[in-house]
Length: 121
Image (cartoon, rainbow, N blue to C red; front, side):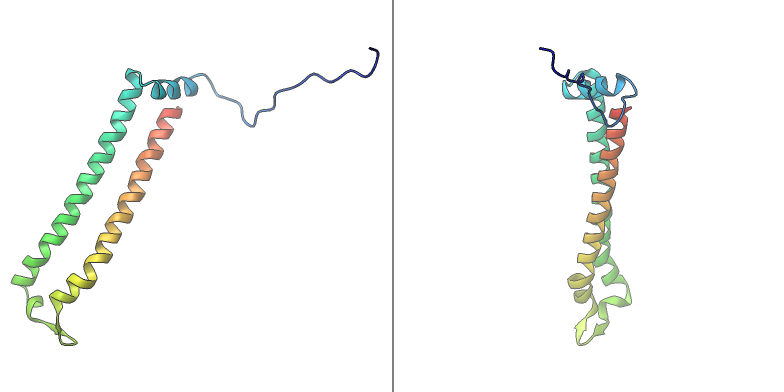
């Protein structure tokens, strides 16, 4: 055939790889090699440590309330005919727990992002 020739196909990529290390690290994590297991173990330990620390903060905050009510003037104070401890337990505890939850999610996502950056290097 003497018709027009087709151009040679060319592979188009959006970005160039910096090296084989990026692929090798992901493969090691996916295949659970010794290095990949160490990376995943580090992420698990970081997430567990974060959960334990924030859990202790929540428990300490909630356990401190009865002591505060018993020893301070807050226990006998009334607002709108309702004792202040009941208002604090009914209203202030939930925003505190919500705040601790939001902090946990943000820090857990940061741990995961650090893991991904480490795995890509």
